[in-house]
Amino acid sequence: MDSNALLISTNLDLVQFYSINLEIFVGAKVKHAKSLEEVLALFNSLEKVDVLILHQKEMEESKLISLLEEQKKANKFSGKAIILGESKISLEGEGNVVNLQATSSLKEVIQGYAKLTGITAKDMALAPVPEFYPISKNYLKNLKSIPCDLYRAADEAASPDKMVKIEPPFSDVFNNNSIVSCFVPSKERLKFINAYNSYYLSEIMAKSGPDPEEQMVYADHLRVQLTEGLIQFGVTEASVVLAETGLKALNNIVSQHGKLNSLLQGMLKNKTGYLYRHSVLIVHFSDHMLKGLPWGTAEMKEKLTTMAFFHDILIKDDNLAQIHTNDDLKKMALSPEQEKTVLNHAYRAAEIISHFPNIPNGTDVLIRQHHGMTGGIGFTDKLKSNITPLAKVFIIAEDCADFLLSMPEHHLKKMEGAMIRKNLLQVLRNKYQSAQYNPIIKTLEAIEF
Ligand SMILES: [Fe+2]
Ligand SMILES: [Fe+2]
Image 1 (cartoon, rainbow, N blue to C red):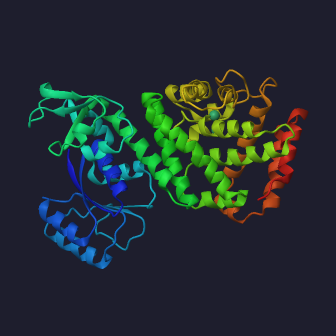
Image 2: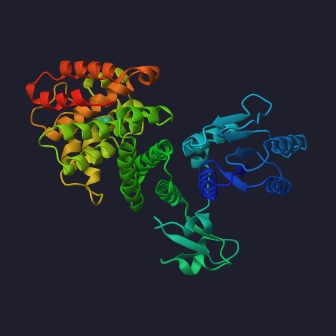
Image 3: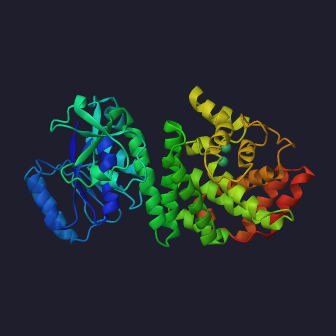
């Protein structure tokens, strides 16, 4: 099931990230080249390149194209490629190239690879693996913590019965040049990769420059990783790191953009999904509402941002996150398992955040109320009056986000702010006729685009 991949990139962080994930999820043996000379050397040393992955390249593209053509003729290159970002390269044969954006998610790259090779992550999960899985030391060195037991082989054959457990700190092993790889129990390798990816994404976010659009894309990848990790492994050290980074990014993105129109246009430039976009917009709208309410405080702002980040964190699918009423739920015809996830997500998210440090007090109560009733299970057709005022602000902010995200993108690009504000106010006043919502909705009369 193994295949050979040649990754051309000058970004070494990304090379490690793709290499380990492609190996674990689709069995790719990834070799890496930065220059034309290295590409040629690798073609000479490998039997055949099954998939070329082209990311950043500091080489003349025309020379690369002719090199690839030669290798294809010599039967050393399959002609299949994943191209990330702009490139003039086109390869013959239908379905031989997967074109992706430079900031595509890991999931898209893995899916592209699976499509080209016919090896799916499911095949890999079912394929027999030895009891211990080798992990190159390069991947281990930068991890802040390792989420499973770590072993080294006592003999060259790496016999499972001769594995020696290593205790932290691992510096002796990491500094020992004769040890190239360590081992994790194979059944724990997905937990390991989740932690690896979490630290990688947190580092990238911490390093990432001033480009808020790119930050938004990475923040969305980070949210996906956090959700996957929480569903599969519960709260781990890696998820705590992800949540801290994610919350910081959410705050940064909203404050960097300032005005709503700038935030919206920023979003339209990238392919982040509903789940991330709606959280960003909820923060923007709820900040605005709190500023206009006489009782709004900075602590409340922190609570609502935390809530925006966590409230749907156990939902993987954009469509499921858009279910807000019993009617929506009926229309979706979900599997029993999906239905259970949707019905319980507020309750379970509230439970989960109590395991995270530094969460503002009472955020769990608010999360449980984000569908308009106190228990956190299911939906209500009429908002209950016993939910807290802050939960009411959140619910209206989410309605504002939904209103904008349901508009066709070309309308959002062109439509005038005054018109959008007028329509939004009308929708909200029709929906919330009880007087207790008036002061909250009234703050939106002053929202600027
Ligand atoms: Fe939501
Ligand atoms: Fe929700």
